[in-house]
Length: 141
Image (cartoon, rainbow, N blue to C red; front, side):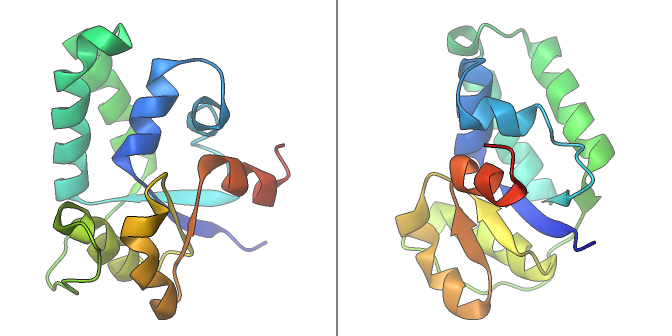
């Protein structure tokens, strides 16, 4: 069985925690599925924490809840240190680190709602899918 390697963009994490409906939430609920492996880097984890803690009241989560989510992600994901930069590949410089991680981890997919910012990575063999598209690929919807 082929195990897909993925990077989960912060916008998907936020959307999935905002509501218990929709593809982002459904994807978060199966993060430990054996058909794919989540990949993270220190930069991505710092961004997860920063964004979630800034939006904690809108999400209805305490800082401890957010720490628990991040701890869970860290416990199931492949960890990568990034020693080289492919920049600039993203049309948004704030997203370049996601591309760096996807290339380092040899990912099949970046799961994101920002397809237009990340589209340049496609030429390097990494596709960008929305949560719904990824769930369709898995046969979950």
